[in-house]
Image (cartoon, rainbow, N blue to C red; front, top):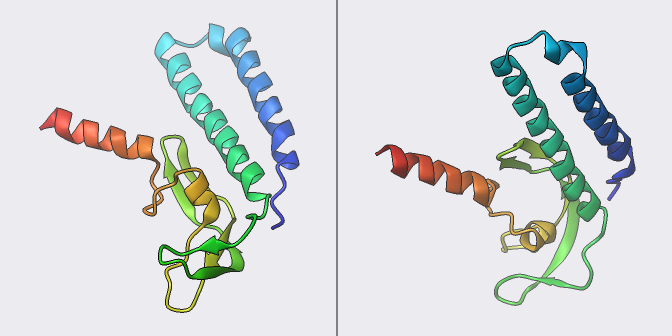
Amino acid sequence: MTANPEPLVQPVQHDFQNLLAYVTGPDARSQTADTVELTLFRRLLALGATRLRLVFVTRAAVRPVGPVLAADGTPLQSQEPRPPTSDAVLGKMRVGRHYVAAPGQAGIGPLDAALSVPARCDSDRLCEWVAYGATDES
């Protein structure tokens, strides 16, 4: 897999420095609290999404070790990396991950299993918040 976390590290550090400059600079001094709060919220979500993507890319760079078995014990063979989309509180992410499959078997992503990413590709936290909002509002 060609996933490489290095190109993501420098922009993450740069984004954080820009956020700090925004908070302490003249832009924040001339804005209302509501505008600053909304700007910080959006930029912090973007920072969090970049860092979460970095976790996925770093972990995806390592090829699965040993045989991967289906639920019935059938050995699964490596396939081309696939870039599934994962929905998280921090936004949608598309990160190439190793994928294994066998004829007549559903394919699985070992990294998804290791990170407890549900098959539906929504984060547990996002599902929890949606369920909470739905039950709280009813």
